Image 1 (cartoon, rainbow, N blue to C red):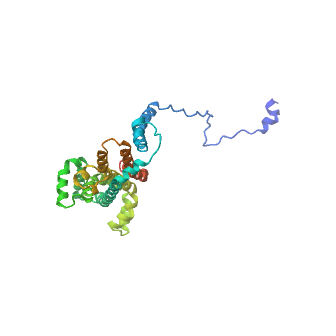
Image 2: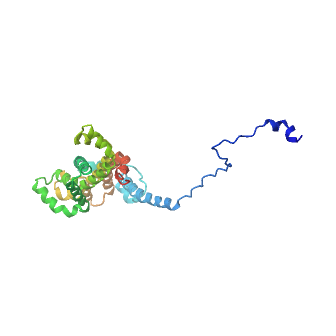
Image 3: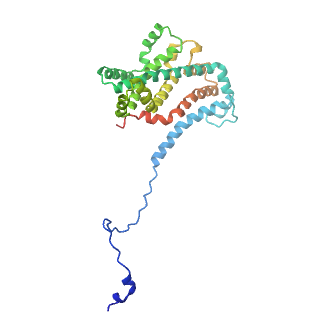
Length: 306
């Protein structure tokens, strides 16, 4: 007899049965993911951009917290020897708080007016099949190509005919008018992302246009509304040409015009106080950005991925 028959261990060990459906594969060593090479060029560009952005901000903030003698002796980019808040007190005592309040009123009223007009207009453009509405939308978009400086004389004549010269209303109306084209464009792109089945379902349930706008469109267009609100607020807060031409009294000045006037009063000598006024004018913009930063990107890119 052979050795295979006499060996009990070989006889007792059954052969591994081949399972159908599972091909025999050889065990391959798992390769580690290749290490990504560092992007030195991108890092260098980011560092350069950080310096470009951070140095002016540091200059404004550091200059506002130092005394005038310290600024003249140590230089503009040096660290303040002693942090003081007297510059902010000087700015607020000079009437700059009134300029801030006027800008807040103008910004809030402009944003409210733009949102109240842009959302129904965008809803009508998306849902209507009329050629008249499409033509009106095309004419509205032409406003993006017309700068405000080119229309300042007709706007001045209209404001004087309406007897609103030297009022905050004279600033709100043209600012809202020039903000509407971009607002309607962004909201139209946002509304086109809403599936048409949702509109049809609410229409079948008996909902009218006002109910659809309130219950469906308003909640789903929140990123676009926040984007339009922040964009309009920035334009209204930084506006200079309309307050300069359409107002005259010191009680109707906004932040931009008040900052320009305050710098002229200082004669370019009290730089720390001027930088304190700049910091005060930047705080509302920073608050608006922090409020809407999560929705800005989604609102601006809505409708461009389809």
